[in-house]
Length: 301
Image (cartoon, rainbow, N blue to C red; front, side, top):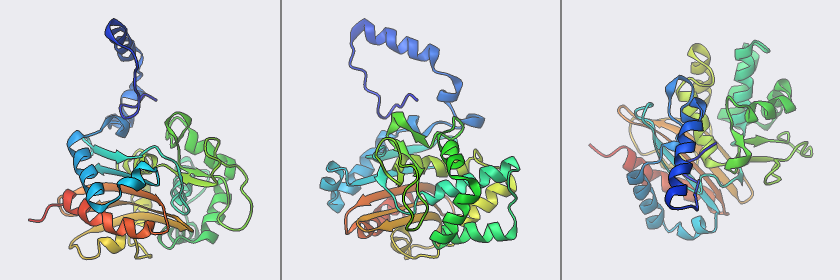
């Protein structure tokens, strides 16, 4: 995958021109745009939004955590789904992500529903909702085994989703049941049992919103499971004082690792935000940062 964010070409003069021409000729349509013509988030960096996000991080005093790669943040304005605007810090930094990779299990389940390998019945619907809304480890493990452990890894690494990419720092990974059992397959880049990069989590939400995972009724069901969060901390806590906000999210915490991820919607604005932190105060960082981020994305009238 060619990433406008992270590819640096250390060449000059005519060699640079020749290389760029080759890239233009050989980049495939799949690389240039997603299914149905939606742009790749990798190629949707917005310099103005980046400057604003960097300013927020500096004002909050998070510069050292970012420099030390203990904090990763991705912000995507998706008010116009055809023109996403992306800003990020350490977006490709893969971190132990606790329960956030339950999003991968949700993805795998709905792919299997889409393919007709399993049926979305009332029992399965309840299990998935409990896994996402209340972060049930029991239901996560149950659904993981229903999908199949190797099958889920296959889905995450498939050309269709590419949510774990060896060339872009990894991504979403589930290689262990949610419980006391040992890991059955750690990710090949970082040896993590449950991991994520902020960019790949943001890509998951963008694909959900644009109907690239499932469509119509299944898409509505999948998004509904992410709504009405049952655990009121981190982003949800930080957004509690703002009116007319709908949040579709999955968070995770274990020891010093804290993360949150969400689609945030208001009447006129919609954005994706992902934060992954490695610090005992990481949950507080996330609750604090979402306020200025929201005020940036949804200016007061």
